[in-house]
Amino acid sequence: MRRLSLLLVALFAVVPGLRAQNAEQGHAEAEAPSGSSIFVSATGKTLWVGESRANRSQILWRQAVTDFDVLRPIRIAGEIAHIEALDESVFVQLETGLYEYDRSDLTDVPSTISNLPGDAQPLALATGDGTLYAVVSGDVARQIRPNADAPALPSDAPSVNLDGADYVVVRYRGERWQPFTALPTSGSGPPAICLVDSRLVLAWRQDETIHTAEITFEHDQPIRTRSQPVQVNGIEKWWLTAVGGVPTLVTVRTSESDKPIAFRWLGAPDERKWSPVSLTLSELPEGVADATVEFAVGFNQQIALLLRTSDAAPVLRYAGLGIPPTLKSERLDETLRGPAAAMRVDEVVQAATWIILIAIIVSITFFRRGAITRDAVLPAGVAHALLFQRAIAALIDMAPIAIGLAALVGVDWRQGLALLAQWGVFAQPEAMRDADLLKWWALTSLTYVGYACVMEMTVGRTIGKFAMRIRVISDTGEKPRPWQMFARNAFRLIELMPQFWILYLMVALARNRQRIGDVFARTVVVRRFEMSPPEEIEDTDEDSESGEDED
Image 1: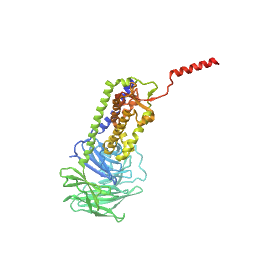
Image 2: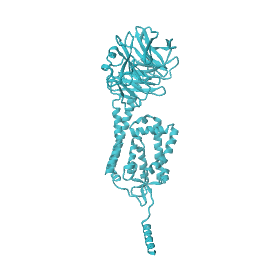
Image 3: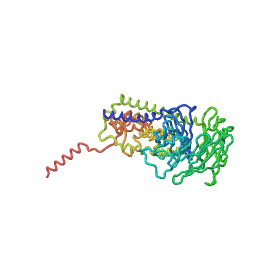
């Protein structure tokens, strides 16, 4: 009974991982993102798109050579107010504070950034070189006080005169916020900022003119210089970003809200000026006739434009600077459905896994309990095969099939096995959406099962079992019948599915060293060992006694 209990524990060990996966994805949105708020941010390498809904937001990312990773979205229980991109992580402003999410962290647990006084939200963000810069109102900046638990500021930290400042740049370096420089801005609204080559570029609008300034650092002290203004007649919207390490302004006119105009800040440091640059737009997705520009950000030597169609659907369009863009436009509502669709596939697989597990447990408990509680009948000179013998035999049989089919399908078998192991051991089923990987493993499993079934039904054992000197017999000690060989191999189709790999623990836990297929087929795998017959032992004793008499 103790072995039966251990077996049931092993079978249920796969369930917590599945349940944790489901809980983690429980608040994913299954509907199209109509009515949601969309946020876009990017670096030269990584583009981030956030979808904000009440208590259930998500963020996807892509790189220039990859599509959006809908398999591993960052899921957030709250509404997004702003995002700011790094290559490997993203800063997310929520109502509860500012957080940093790492795209490689599958748990979606963020690093917390200390809140600004009064839980105020930054008006603009820029980041780089391990420092986070934010624009806040002068009132918020004047409330920043030293934290008793934080180390003192260095002696060369900039001293900032905040008197009368409407807006202030503050910075965060892992432990505390610190006023950095007051801003000489005026006009409508706070300034936009971006960090380019370790210098801050500011831009603010006054009527139909966009004023800009540059802040460089000398011994950590800010030095501000002004640049020439940019005038755009009939300006409606504008954004400050960086493309290829060059500050770039993107504007749209009221009369042409679908045709962006771009300016680049080019030239030597003392001679920089804003120069217009022609934009070449990617074709709109099929079915989209017109759309207005809602946001612009630099990404991969081009500009990513967030558009809204007449029915409020979000579209991502790309603009090349003087040359055609390398990326195609896409409907974000379809992209943002990806995680929900992937979650539904996960739920189907998890439900099927539960059903199969329960069926196996019930069948063993009520119909094959004797295979777990009673010893098999083994012929004389035969013992259960050792675990390492069975493992090496399986490796000899399966490795050539797996490696050969991997080359045929075009899959890296090492990486494929790693992904399958993540699915089977850690309940992370990313491999489930890789069509080539699934094709390879399905072909490998079917070929291996067919090979093992034919070999064992015709010659009694596979090449691997022959090499390790083990074979299959009936649990009554007799030669197995063809149906038994067929049944024990047919069950491999279940056991080779990654979420059921844990079932192989049965070989170590079961009384007769049987896997699931052996239990239901009433077979055991055995090895032959040398055992001296009793009569030979008696003859030896008699000879020894007669020898003593002779002496």
